[in-house]
Length: 161
Image (cartoon, rainbow, N blue to C red; front, top):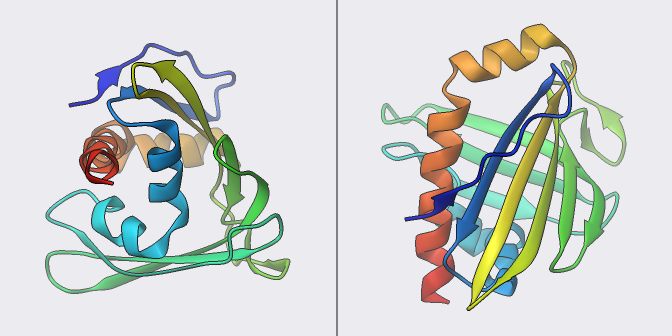
């Protein structure tokens, strides 16, 4: 199980999930960038991720589809704003593809991956929202619990690689 880190948000519109993941940094990064791996951990169980499509490069598009226990699907399109292989990913839902604006931007995610020694990774997800209201909505949706569960699932997949 991942180890929680206490890292404060940098603003009133940000949520942070920080963990030490018991898997090498390269594996944790792969879990965020290889569609076949993303589908194994991205949604908190009992939800699933039936599909993921990714063009992992600055300006590349991403589509991750989550499905609820009832089978209803929730597509999450976005664009990679910055990709530093093995170290950092910045993505947003403000665009759906090729700089096409989304109907309602909600967040920008900054993921960092750092070696923590002994084959472990310092994994930090900073999620910046367009407004305090959006941040509060994300918290009410279960950000800490859901993203925490997904971090545990991510660790499980990354350890098997």
